[in-house]
Amino acid sequence: MYADCHIHMILDGVYYKDAIAAHKDHPDPDWIHKTLAHYQALGFTYLRDGGDRWNVGATAKRLAPQYGITYRTPIFPIHKKGHYGSFIGRTYDTPAEYQSLLLEAKEKGADFIKLMISGLMDFDHCGTILGAPLAAQEIRDLIHRAHDMGFSVMAHANGPETVIPAAESNVDSIEHGAFLNAEALHAMKEAGTVWVPTLSTIGNLLKTTRFEHSAVEEILASAQRNLRYFHRLGGSIAPGSDAGAYAVLHGEGGLDEYGYLHRVLRDDTQSALSQGIAAIKDRF
Image (cartoon, rainbow, N blue to C red; front, side, top):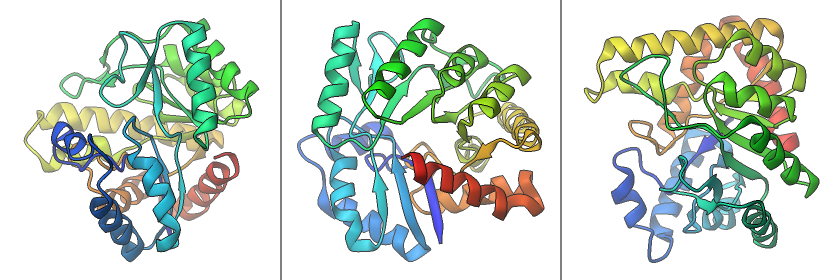
């Protein structure tokens, strides 16, 4: 049995604008049923969605028990105005607006809160993150407010400038975590933060011609080095493919992620991922 701890039901792994357009008027139940059935056929029993503002993930959560799948969703991800996340998430600009989104998520039955606190990797240039990160104190405030309402927090975060304050605020999971340094990795380990590195979003680009392969290979090697280091520290690691992202197909992307993680963890793969999945299920 498999778990994919980071998916986007609303996306299709091909082109995000077309995928979102298919659900904009209302969630497409045929797509959701087909995708859940595919996960079931491949042996997935746990899925954790990153959320969307069109209720696709929320609909999938309602339908998932028909397929023997435990499905968790934040309902919608939250991002700050002017920062990464507007294509899929709900926006806040002031602390009062953020608090209002937390209350709305609670009313709608969110299982946790997803925060977008950094930009994306630049797949053309290893070490570069696109878009400005949130300030460290704001990151701390966002996480503390969510925790105070009883929510666990999933954070889209790349770079030590976002991961360190998030870990110091006891963020429950870090998603992606590109281009980290030793300080950030130690901070996650000390906080007990689960790292969901989504290696498929990098490695699967090597199956395409969208980016220069040499740059992608360098980024993947960087992620693998950091993951080995984190594993040696005793950090918690969970599989999450970011299924729905470009070149990461639902179901197959999750299996790809297990393969990428096995290349890093090797003989420790089963025990390490079992522990990480258990930590995710316990918190989310």
